[in-house]
Image (cartoon, rainbow, N blue to C red; front, side, top):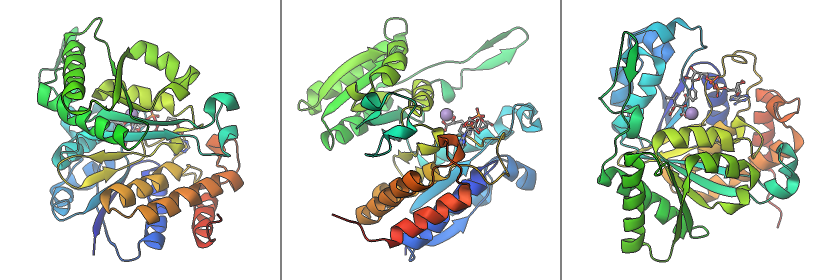
Length: 351
Ligand code: NAD
Ligand code: IPM
Ligand code: MN
């Protein structure tokens, strides 16, 4: 019996995770679900954002389903020493799981082009996989400080770190259209020079059948929303991937449509890419689609249950058509949307 650890977290995290868990129970009734604390709430209850009990629960987990962590800009959590802040709990979780590759699919499902602010001809058929490096770069480097009127952080990568995430991107491209775009800032940064060199070398050594090109991150920020159809797999370092994936959320129409899977050495971590949305938390109106689609990714990548994953994706698409949430210009609240997903899973697929 697979064991899934759920970490609802802060803000809208518990709201969207409840929706995701309802769908998970429906589609995989045999799984054991164990809930634990993370983030600001965990700090309040246990004095740390990634408590020992949560860390222990991961040991025999088959997959982890996360909500969101963090508070508003004026939250007292933002004044805590950095290791005690909610976001540090999430970073520690990712590190503990060893999940170095964060897969962030950007997809416009057929018949849902109208949810995109882009012209329908640009949005139609978009299917991009952003592979974000998740355990390195400027996020984790110990060479960092703020003192007086000076502060610095360091972006550092090693060849093994670049190769393992690039390997994941090439492997994914082989199951897709066979094209990888590596995104860097090699015209300015040495760390990007290494990144580009190592990605190219891996392609030449191991993935001759995959087409690889290199683009600069500033240019990609423009092209990904003006010509999204040009991309298949994008692979990039941690910070660039964080920024580009929120930007790419514009294509399907909302951050609430962006799930993710973080894969690596241990059990996978599955989470929506959006944050705790303090502006709408507690109102019952958050879009749970990204969290529910993350359950789809959990079923596919964490439990190797692709039929169940397909059933979830199909049900979400049907629900989005009939009951769009407010972030998508509709009126459905979290519960109405979740009910629509559950109902859609009961209707047999046509064709
Ligand atoms: P955010 O993603 O929480 O919100 C940005 C905007 O998108 C807000 O207007 C919000 O209402 C909206 N939005 C996000 N998800 C939505 C959903 N599912 N349905 C409807 N609308 C949605 O980003 P932020 O405001 O910059 O950050 C808020 C907090 O979340 C911060 O503390 C930040 O550190 C944290 N954060 C956490 C994660 C995570 O847990 N993985 C990710 C990003 C940000
Ligand atoms: C995300 C978030 C996190 C990140 C923060 C909350 C640490 O923005 O998951 O995209 O920057 O990775
Ligand atoms: Mn982010």
